[in-house]
Image (tube, rainbow, N blue to C red; front, side, top):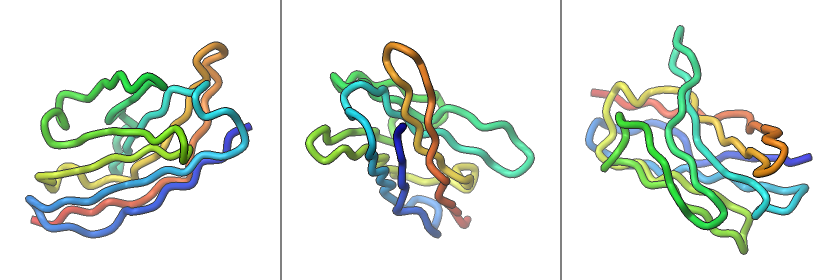
Length: 117
């Protein structure tokens, strides 16, 4: 079992920045590919970014060049630095942990990000 606790959401103006954090506990952090997903009202949850234990990253085209995912394996924490925010980035952001062998997925409770124009 993995417990994920997100923090750092809130309100930002277009062009601004926010940093999300996700603290993991309950299992060996390096066994998991970590990721951020988001879900806007009346839309399906979508991938934002993922990062492997070796820090290989993958981004949705919509956030490339603006968002940066990183992880601190010593602190069992993954981050999402969001710059040049746009109103269309408004969503609930969820932290995800996927086991690298079993692909078992765990989710955080979500944190709201609202970008005003």
